[in-house]
Image 1 (tube, one colour):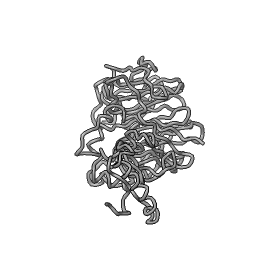
Image 2: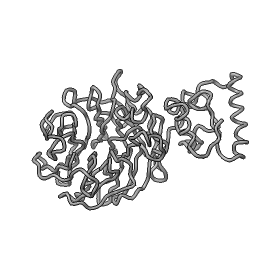
Image 3: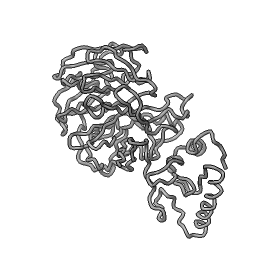
Image 4: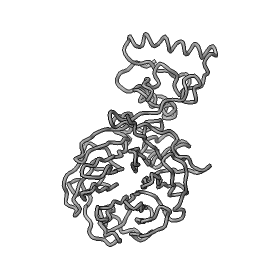
Length: 413
């Protein structure tokens, strides 16, 4: 029996029993989509583990119902199967709901439906075209997997072309800009995989920290004029791939970077750079002049400009702690933050209790895209980041297969 008000119960479960048990149980407390308390006064995904919380009066009343369930199980009246193993009486578990108010999202369980034996492994980035087809740029044997918005497999391409997927951007004409940090190139491709343009020389990186393109390039974005921005500094190109200018250097001052990890632009031509290890997003004009920065972020890794027009919003994927000393500190992610064009936070999704494979949790958000209905697709590098978060545990099979791609369906009405 544990009696404490200092940490969330799921936090204690993970620390006492490991991520496997915590993953089977999922969120503890908070309301599911059926407006019942999650895993409270009812069977959980771990047989024999029950939770009671709330005021003393609540616990006194509801403990009787919990006791009746235990007795019914012992007498064979109720099956022993846990709720999220297919409880015949209660039905399947309610999907996790993240966010509040207008920004609530339902986690779509087991979204990606792949051919037998296929694995996505890390999903470095994701994009959605004008027909709501989802492009999954991954580090498995089939680098570009294409799904419909229900997760059904359509096709794959890129086998033998890409070395290591890292970033993906799609333009208004459904051209894909595939950033490969393994062979130090950006390739502009059609939606069926035809290469239209290659920037950089495959497998010939610029010298480390030389400031010349490219050495481990990370992501690409387009200006309203079709100009191409790529980084590990920020490099600006003409639409046909000619270098215009570069800016940035290592450091922590305005205009300096500590891992330029993602980049986005808006309709006015402002350039937004996820300066990951400086825990900020920096904002520049199209010529590289520093304008401002957004703070109160934790290792911003993924960055998506949404909505277009003069008042866009942004979804930022934040990584969790990267050091042993703060590995288990709560409220540091991994998570998604939604902010306005000034960087003011509108909503935050997840991240209160650290990483995990349970519904409603993230591992390492690395790429984000939205479809026409406002649903969010999140690519995660859960395998690359696994030992950072769980140094003593093996990578679960589901993480190697499809868990590194998540869909969050916007709750409407």
